[in-house]
Length: 471
Ligand SMILES: Nc1ncnc2c1ncn2[C@@H]1O[C@H](COP(=O)(O)OP(=O)(O)O)[C@@H](O)[C@H]1O
Ligand SMILES: [Mg+2]
Image 1 (cartoon, rainbow, N blue to C red):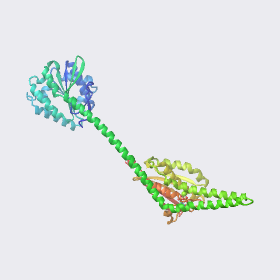
Image 2 (image 1 turned 180 degrees about the vertical axis):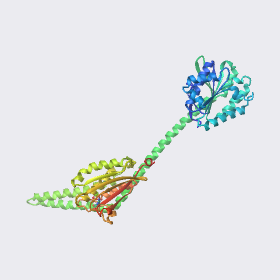
Image 3 (image 1 turned 90 degrees about the vertical axis):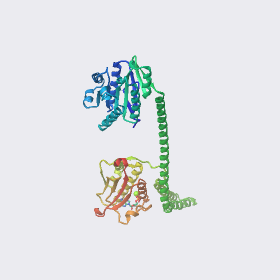
């Protein structure tokens, strides 16, 4: 708290921390009023309670007039009690004598009252002309003040008429304040004691040191974060590879089939060509079959290569509704080919999901295409419905169709790799979609549409929303 800076209102000084105790030597009353009015103005503008203790020849009226000239809404501040102007005699010499402890108590009480009333702190200025006779008292007082305001939301500016101070008194004043400001013949001087200078240098050094440490800590945190992300990416990769490990046997089988067929077809092709009279039409047929076989193998490989890719998952804020709308535009003509209507019922004001947009698109595309494929051979009047909803912590997206439907036993089985009922299906769409959703921390499941006279199926999945978006 003590490091919080306050504006002094004095250009030559600039900002100061709470707990600052400094003094002003002035030549003319005009200079004094001018300087103190700016000092108080800065305090009022920063919601500080201001206390101006005036001593002859300056009167309360002089101070008020100077403030009225400098502070735009001075009357309001005076009326709401943000500033008080008190005579030195009334503040310091309540029973005609100066009591150090009573005076210090007075500052503390003022501070407590101001804090209770919501002020940022207290800004004081006091003139010590009243102390003419008690110089030792005064030195004691200024020293005690240093103790009392350290670490408090208090700043004190003491003012001294230069002409009335003897040389040794000036030394005492400078010694007992953190620094002194003097206005002489219209120009400013700032006099710092060696101790204060040293302390400031030390603070500056500490601040720089701190800044350096903060930078280092940030760098370290960034490196850690990077390492963590890498580890997570490696982990996800290993998980997928392990999953794939279980698939390898069936995968090898799936790919071997078309390759074996291709080899057979290539041999056949060679045989037709190796005849004394090569049978070109037969050879061409065999060569075409090779293309079909190899394309099939390539399709299988590319359909699963997504799962083998090793890259840190992209996580960005994704507007899922927007993604759904884009996908509908993309696939509408495919649906139109089979007179299938696509409807959407998207919740408004959905929080963004934290996801890889491209992967989510892939999932949506798989589900929509499966839906279309399930309906294209059934009777007319088919419909594909896509919905989105927000639930605590995640979004739920559903894709329903009115197609062939699913038997209870099928709803889990279809997520197994290479399970397909289609002539040219590969059976990798659903397992890959589920693996993508699970890598996002979501779930994917299928249900037969019992409420739809046994017709159609619904696929649902969840995607987590960001913590910030939930709040
Ligand atoms: N909407 C659906 N309605 C009925 N059956 C479906 C639907 N979606 C998928 N299936 C069944 O699940 C199987 C696997 O789907 P998928 O993994 O996408 O592979 P593919 O589409 O290549 O067959 C499909 O062959 C089909 O039998
Ligand atoms: Mg599919």
